[in-house]
Length: 334
Image (cartoon, rainbow, N blue to C red; front, side):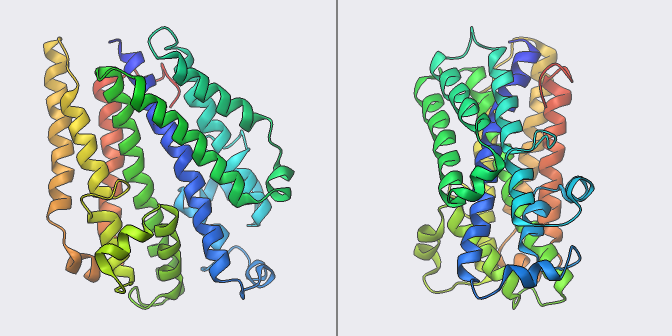
């Protein structure tokens, strides 16, 4: 398999997962709005960009896009943040950009990828391309982002059902699960940053608690969480669940272990690539080992989010290692 094809497949997995995660992230905000309905948007706006508890700024921070957003829009508002995250083509990580990149990469593989996958991604892009910023405000944003999740679920279901379990499949899944681990960690890191900026205690921070609880619901993990913790709802138990739970599909632990499995299924004939492949597997194993050393007490004592920051940096390093090992840089959209 040519390196450029491997890169295109890897980024198809990443971009489609990123689109779903963005939709889930905005769902976090709307869950939070419903819970904090007594808090007026006007009061939040009046505090300006410096407000540490500005919920709209937390969404941008979770994407790691504060500097880019501020340069373009200057201040935070519901309409501007929704436009930036969904339909802004100048934002390389907006929903429309992610789907467009996935579609462009899949186009280069039309002869190799199942036609049903192309139909799903192309249909998703054509539907999203027709949307206008005012449509997001006129319709229910919750329904709109629910439809985004349905489109991505359609793609995932088709790929699960029709793709042969060969290298192409495993590269898509590697991209998907690396992206999933990174996005979960970014959301938690944004909650840590909110608490640090507010001066509250991590254990008693109402902003972090409500934000993480809403995140749990948006990850479709609330019912599963209650099975494990019953009424023991706390910041530490939520972070423990989304990082360390072994069977929840959107936990960091599950994502990294699944990434490792798909990495080990990739096969190369070239001896040089096989050696490089082994090196990447060892690096994934190192991140898994770091995770295995953690327990709930470590999370309880981590007042400044150093553990989450370390894991996020390790995942980002893994992405760079993939590129250096398997891909010719610049030959596919990244």
